[in-house]
Image 1 (cartoon, rainbow, N blue to C red):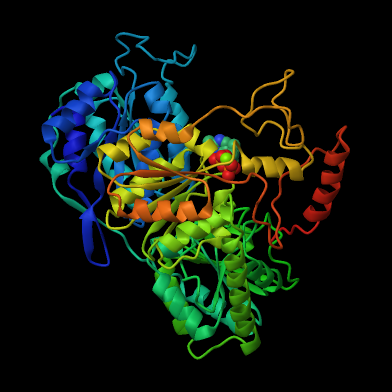
Image 2 (image 1 turned 90 degrees about the horizontal axis):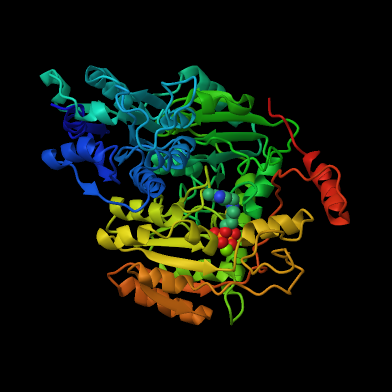
Length: 618
Ligand SMILES: Cc1ncc(C[n+]2csc(CCOP(=O)(O)OP(=O)(O)O)c2C)c(N)n1
Ligand SMILES: [Mg+2]
């Protein structure tokens, strides 16, 4: 067999099993062919015929699709992505970083230059003087959890075993990259038969050390204002029922990170909703006074900790339950290394009969109700051109509990984190580890492929849309229906607001004509907007398009889109300046220490005052 034929035959036999449920590791292969993979991996896929092949439109996008699929399937299944050499390969580097940062599995198979060096330089070869063994694929090394280059056919077997081990290891998973020189892909070798036998990779549920569980239980019993922070790991581990049982039994309230949103239903009395820089007032007030924070399945990123200002109690204790020791030990926490579900069940057993002080649970329930009233107020808004909060409200009202909202970058992730009423653990899919513009449509496609029975609502800003509308074509090709709500506010509302808040007046964030050498700022209104029609663009890619001007028209359009079988884009303009406020939180974006503008100098003073509240949590 050729190296590529052996690779495909091996991949088709890999399965995963957790809690007795077995499934193929790979849903299929996404690929864009070029001279670096068409005759190798391409030929092998055609000859084998047992793996579903999907042709996407952009290599970065195909990695997003694979990663979104893996996230929806709780990291148990993913796709392989095959690319040509050179630009096809490096287009995947952004997707690889996104996968690794979000701890989500994806198998990348970039083509590589000739191992034999027979024809150097091949088309698209880097040629780094002094380093003939380097290729552009070395850029995958820092963004991959496993990287290898198969320079001889007989290197393949051991490398494949290691690649799949990392993909399926819940603590190590991320992008796994096997670079495949184009000559080696086509080279034949006598592979041992055992390589192609079916292999089942069991996903274990490691139980945290009982001594650490006992320590945490003692901390909980001594605490007066404990708080659980639920991250993505709670959902990936299918631990939401265990979390709810613990919250019900003990009365400990729960706040959620972006990846953890949906861990609790929004209307549970112990659910405080989003935590941190994009958090709710409920979660941020409880976090500020918490004397014990129990983080579960979270990386504790800057948005979650409000850049290390979220927890202000002088006697604060931190504990962290995580399958990855690296994450469990962050911020000097008492580390519980293990599976989220196993750990929560063990903690609940150790806390049997214990309840927090009634006032603490009652405060959480009151804050939950007050927050929901605030959501209702923002959803209602006023008649006329919609605010972004009204757009989110209209989509939430139209969606069924099990439907999924998908987003990644711009002002919408923060607003969704605060305002989306999640009713199902898999109903909320906002990629906020890498917050990559362009993820939305490609990611929505991945979710739809993973869950065809759910309606998938992609919320995308005009900036993100322009970066990667291409996968509308792939969604049409695959009959994977998406409802895409395209929110046009003529550029970067998010970074524009950030810029204004830091004294730089929205500089460089509006889509307008250049005038007198400049693109203008928010306060200069002399620049005409660009004559761009994104709805027409979406239509030209094969989507059904509905234009909505008012909130009522948007609601009508959402009804039509639900009944439609084709991918539908609802184009709506939203006000650039009608934002959802920040609730008792902060995000560290350093401001110039010295500047000519009085606005920047004032922002620097505010910045220094806010930063003073930062803590080390060591
Ligand atoms: C690939 C990428 N480039 C740049 C950024 C930085 N960035 C974050 S949000 C944003 C603007 C997004 O614009 P749009 O999609 O229109 O959303 P809006 O801010 O208007 O809500 C930018 C440039 C990013 N997150 N991803
Ligand atoms: Mg925008």
